[in-house]
Length: 395
Image (cartoon, rainbow, N blue to C red; front, side, top):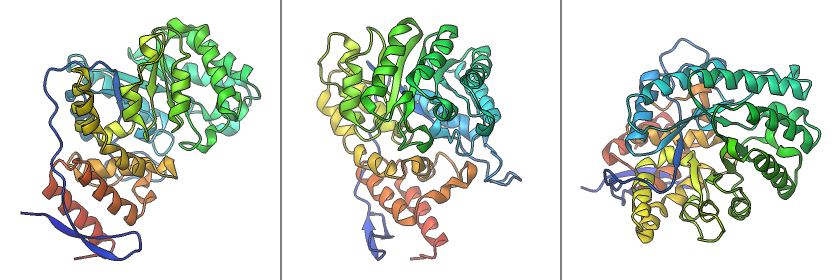
């Protein structure tokens, strides 16, 4: 029987909608990927906690860790305590460290599970940060805490550094210090200002090419300490240009939630294998995990057409979830988890479920259906109708 419901459209009118997609393709078991793929994973809020959501983070630890086990079972790594987990938008450093500790502990029970953890300076009060030395001490504090747990670092872009740096040399000083101390190769993190306006001019320049030169110079000075760099600029040409200039063995982890399919597939050009394609560290992989896993499995077997057939239809959904204001994409990620039964409610740390409109979420529902990403269509329809009723649309 066809499932139907009434959804609002762009004009604000209501129109009937009949589901047309199928459930997600099931990944084939036992296939080793030929790309490293991290999903930046969301956190599940505790809706029953006695907190003020805008001021305090309350996490449902069981549901949050269950979702990480879901990602690991699909062959995806977990990029922990990143911006998808609302780092800096509801998730503070003490809660982030607790999340990292719990995730690393849970990973010990999953053979081959990958975890890399966000290391930043978000515990600092920006008004108290006066110098580059303050930024360095901030990074070192989080670095020591994560490495004490045995964690692999993702050195996150720093709002504090962007605020006090006056030149590319300030970035070079900070990253030279951090990389020289790292116990194992780290992932660097370049987040564009569309994701966080406070990071405008990162690497010491508003000119992307000049900023890229600075970042590449830092990597070239420490190639043995850099596993790779994740860039989220939503500009595939800039990513490809940087990818081809990386030192041998240093990976490009695409963070481009608009063009990930073609960037992961690669173009075959470049003197080094890592120049020819991107690995992945993506927030959208949280929302499309089964499709991402199935597509990566097909790519590993050389089935490029199947890879694109599975992943291609997810791109319009991703572009919608990450539409401007891009920093509010986390709402769409959590909405997908709720529709698909991975959590029992649609509430978020920091009350961030309110950052997107009903029209936005209705279009997200249609695009998820078109991409074959509704894992339990009946449940998804029921929950969408519940959301509509909460907005006064009981049809």
